[in-house]
Length: 555
Ligand code: ADP
Ligand code: MG
Image (tube, rainbow, N blue to C red; front, side):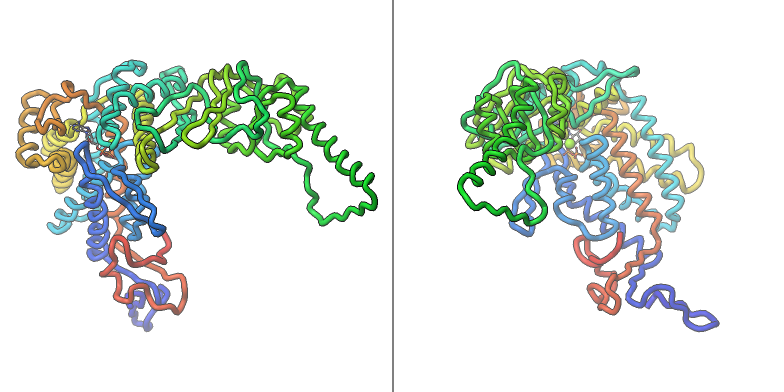
């Protein structure tokens, strides 16, 4: 076993006998191979002509998507290096919301090209240095290429949202949806000293299968996936005064087994009367505050419901904590724990609170809130799978609009900026000395994997298309890219394919980080957790697949 070192003093055992170790070139090759396989997996889903993946989990649940982050999350990758690519997809998703597939594909290309250099005896450290410099340079180049826009320009923001949705199942409905998305993000954007910020959590996205994608709509307020608790209560309140309570309207059951001896009917009656009185007392406090709507995070006793209904208070119970927080923000109410602390000043307001039937469910809409910085998009679509995928696309689109509002710089899509940066990088590489030059050139090649893949997925000839694209750009049209839908190389202005600069920057930096991290590894040591058990797989690590091998590895 590799873990035993022979020294003049005899064998030295550093690692546990069951540990698996893979060193040097082998470790690198294996990691690169795994990462490349992951990139290969998502490659066919890039762009508007990309294909979808059908993912089936162990319970038989089906997800249909072409969202890079979702694909990788669902397939449960096990190889440690492959896991790193899954991580960058997640990081990209969290940071900028879009560009997850691109990040993984670029990382895969960086590793594939690094492998060629390693085979020519270029040391990985040199490649890593070259890649990092090239990434920095690329970000500078794109910064110069990008156009500054007005962060509140609805037309531009709409185009950005539409480009992001072009590549998804919702493409046909992207016009209507993008207007809604721009409205939603602008509604919650807050002005700061040097621009705007958007807290995407202020936009609640709810989904309900049924109807069509066109029925998706935006509410300036909050939608609760809950019904009014008692049939005797009003179903609609205008000029609502809203109380938010995060404790139960019930009598606490004791934690001990208590025994009450009741020997005659009078005692029974007075016992029940007492309970009744305590609950009525609670409800009276709500009534006294002046509330006509009550949202409660916990349960509400039947008797309490009866009294609340008698007082015509629209009541909803068991509301999620996150929703209660949103309601507090939207309506200006204070969340109260102890009913003794509930007063008029703690109530929030909304123009309209109403229970509305959607398909078979009843939902409560809270609209016309005092603080409009809370909106809800209710996603509709033919089936659960459709609404799930629409929700993911809406998330991406909301994020790209936020990206542009916060950093109002845009570039073209369709592989235009990648091709532009690659050309400029190759020129710049000539000024570098030594082998770093080779790494920078390979970095440029790796960026071009985006136009190549877009062309491939559209059934266009990738080599001819790239050659044409490069030559048109050299003639001065920097915004020329591949119009995938028409199958031609053209100016992206004519087809309105625009993307946030932040997304492109994030793709470059996260792909470079992941590739460099993987390249710097020259030793993989897998420690099995159960001592004495046979090593996993039993055939060493040569056979570690992307989705198999080393399940016990501690990462
Ligand atoms: P990602 O997860 O990386 O966002 P997508 O499948 O959404 O992957 O594809 C994004 C790529 O598709 C971007 O490079 C974008 O410029 C490109 N793209 C989107 N719409 C078009 C279009 N109509 N024509 C050409 N390229 C497009
Ligand atoms: Mg996308």
